[in-house]
Every structure is written in structure tokens, then in C-alpha cells.
Image (cartoon, rainbow, N blue to C red):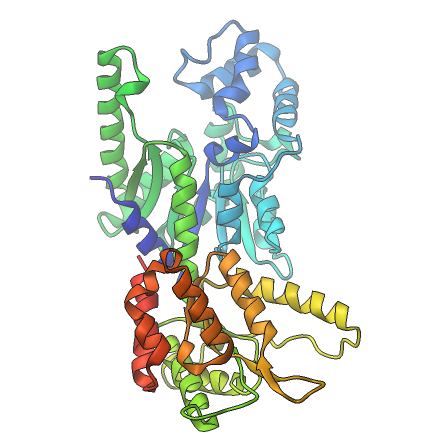
Length: 474
């Protein structure tokens, strides 16, 4: 039977965190941006040889018939260029999968929307569309995009006709080998893919024959066949039975289906997936230039250090802007656990983002620091606030740190989970008061307000924070 979206999000998030996730993009991922699917590409070609593409089930043969009648590939090459060379807007699904820290992307599409989405996310894609490119590594790459059927920029070598598929093993054998390896070792999410491609059938069959039932688990989306889409009950029954059989067949190859009633649900699921991944990316905001009972300097540093350590122990990645007074304690607390329990994998569990210094112009400094904060908080899903005070540069009076309050406003706008440890006072208390006035939008804090507002026992506070984060995970 099909799996739930909750299982997909939970298991695929795990694969992302462990570096084992991959994406397989079909035509359905590009279609919302205005690109055609396989039928859309072949329709004008079929029309010109008096075939109805909607009546044909073997689309490879349609392309081959056209090629045979014309005697050359030129018109096919031009059709690919015309269909996939246009400038389009990157759709939301592409933006999400490009932002996620996934290293491996496969596609049968000719268009460039996947690699452009990766670039838009400020990541550097290494695109492989020809066998010769597989052995060359692009410097500073953040992801590999395997275009196993070719690229719009070289349509003469694109895989489209029946003959192209028959000769695939001769012309592109390394793509099959590379995909087989990834399907064995990674967890794939197929998006917009119909599983009607003969190459994928062959590769999945080979893996199944070699590994038997010891195959990896992958996931795909399908729009559920619905009776309201059909006027003929018999046609609905036939297509429903066919979809059930396809779902069962895919399960034999380790591919679990997540059904949606509308395609927009895929976007919602991908958003939830990204949010769930970010739930273990935790930003600790706070500064302390003044300490007062019960929060002495020692107690404040103990809270910050222990909190960071416990978060790391729970497989979180702690982000710190090196806040005054508590930044060092956050870093030291995280490092203690990383070196003792996490194989010294510092980058996986600690992200240091000290603010740019030596900017003399106050206006430029404020603008740069605001942008810097936005970048930090975009990459995290949870924002914890503690203390938040500083000395006024002119009067030397202790005031609320406006930077911490700005971080709260940015975190709120990004949809982050907000956890203000109000008992530490200053900005943290102001944020807690703000939350209490608007508790409907922070329902996940309802059961924890008293602890966050009044508790001074460090272990109790940390336990409370961990419970809040855990409650929001799939």
C-alpha cells in the first residue's frame, strides 16, 4: 500500500541529513514553469505525419516514425531547441529541491531548470550530459546534475527516438552504471516522473535481479485517479485498477508511492520537508553585557554552553553569530560534545557566523548586518533567544540589544520556530511577552510558557527547549 506523506518526510529528511538523498526529476517538475512534457514535444511531429499523439502509447515509435519519414534528425533537433530554449521562471518545487543540501540530481529532461534552480540557490552545479563529462570534476561544485538523455544545447545527441534507446548502451553506458550505483546507495525522490521510460525500467530490473529484496527504499509522487475526472465509470475503473497495479509494481522495485489529490499538494509536502530538515538547524540569538541575579556570568555561560551541547547531542546543527557575552560559551559547549561524541564532525553540528567588522559607516554596517542576519536565519528552522542586552555607546547604560530584536522579526518572517527563554530577561523577555499576546500563532509554546518565563533551573529550561523542538519534528 502507499505510504503517508509523514513517512516520506521523516525518512527522506533522515537521508538528507545523512548525505544519502537524491532527486530524480521528470517532465512534471518542469511543466509548471511552462515546458512541455513528452507528449507536448511530440505532438507537432506526430501531427505532421498524420498521427494522433493522444492515441499512441508507444511514443518512442512516434519519434522514430517521424525520423524515418524525414530521413534526418534536423527537425527533431529543432523541435527540442524550440521547446526547451525559452526563458522561464523557476517554479517553487524546483526552488525547494535546489535549496536542500542534496548533492545528486538525475533527470531525463533536456531543459536547464534544475541546474538554474541550483544556481539561483547560490550553489554551483556540475552538469553531466555526455559520457565524457563524467570523469571531469568541476571545481567547487555543490551538486551534480546528471542529464541522462542529453541537453537542449546539444539536441543532436538527445535521446528521443526508438533507435536512440536501442543504442543507449553503446553511446551512454556509463550513465546507466552511475544511476545503478546511486539507486543502490541513495534514497531517491522521484518528482514529476511517470515511470514509462524504458531506460529506467531496465536499470530497476537489473538492480532487482542482482539484489533481490535487499534493495533501497525510494519515493515518488502520483496524482490519485479520481472518479470526478471521468464521465465514464468504466474508464475510471480501468484507470484506477491500472494505477493500483503500477503502484504495486513500483513497490517491487523499492519505490514507495505517495498519492496526492492535487498537484499543488506536492509543493506543500516539499515545503514541509524543507521545514522538517531545518528543524535541526538551530540559531541561538543573544548577547549579554550585563549580568544580574539569578543570572550571573557563570550561570549564563553554563546555560548557553549546556544548551548548545544538548542540541548537538540531539543531532542538531547549532548556528551562532558569536554574540557578546555568551557566544564563546555556545561554541565551547557545542565543541565539547562534538569532540567527545560526534567523531569531530564540526561542520555537521556547528556553524559559526561572526558578524563583519571594521565597517565605519553606521548606515552601511546596519544594512550589511541586517542582510547577514537574513542569510543566517534563512538557513535555520529554529531560533532560540536568551538575554539580549548591551551597553549604550553614549551613555554606558544597559539597554535591550536591538540586533536580537531584529533577529526575532526576521525569524518570524521566515516562519522559524521561536523559543524565547524569557526568564533571562531583556530582549528574550520582550519576545516572550510578544508571544504571549499572540499565542494563537505560537500554539506550540502554550504548554511551555511558564517554564520559559519563570524557570531558573538550567536543566529544566534545556529540557523544555528540547521538547519544543522535538514536538515539531515529523
